[in-house]
Image 1 (tube, rainbow, N blue to C red):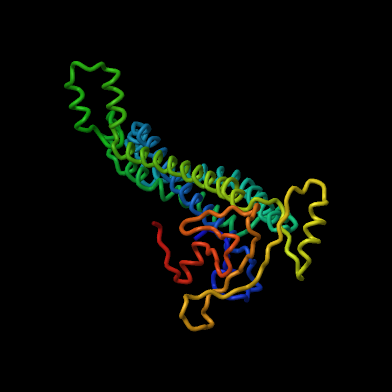
Image 2 (image 1 turned 90 degrees about the vertical axis):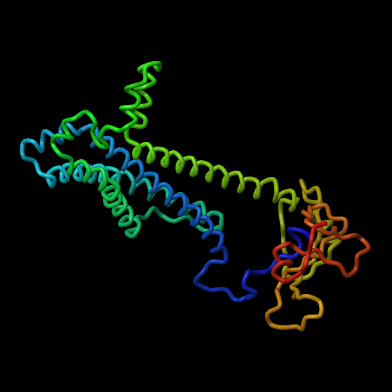
Length: 337
């Protein structure tokens, strides 16, 4: 059995295509799926950073909050101050995001169009994308800032003017204060690190998500480079593939092709449509459709990647090599060993 050899014409056993859908829509959907996952992770990471930043800002400004509340500022006034700051920064980010995202999407679109041999499209701004970006830039940071801002607005004047800030003094601080044989620098480092355990947890979560994104990007990059680099060229060992609409004389085509400068080798393959079903099963409309390739033996331009069994021999008459996916879809049993 081989990973290549007989290739299904499509995944649904139908030779009718939706005129409103491109034939390579599945490949484009895979690209969009990867981009969607990465975008979702980037959004989560950004919200974690917003939460941590607002928590740190509110914690550092506890004294100012206490002074404002002491002179008559209510919780609504404090909420307005911090939420206004979040909206301002979100608006500034939006001014940068919309043009850069439009430019990036145009470059990606032009790359995909060039792959499909289509003309590039002009730079346009999608209203839907702009609305989604506006909602994310303005509403998502507000949601992330709700908890720390409300915690700061509800704090009492006595708690605000103390030196603890959000979270208050912890048992770890009192425990470290009793330690005598450790340098004060190490004690201060431990105290600041674990003073607010919630903030430490969010920081670690942000680092984990960013590391996950980095590993995903590197894994996808290596996988694509290997699949469309070393692997595919170890299977298909040729640079140009031409398909004739009508049968041609093999010797004449080979002679003309080899006469062209730079051509080192040429092979003529047969191509036919076939139906595949287990032996003994009656013919039906649900039989798997496959494309059957007939290659010369020995072939120099095709490298089989065998999983089980053997490759074709010159003396074979009624023999076929199935790719793994088609064998599983057709119910052909196979085993290694």
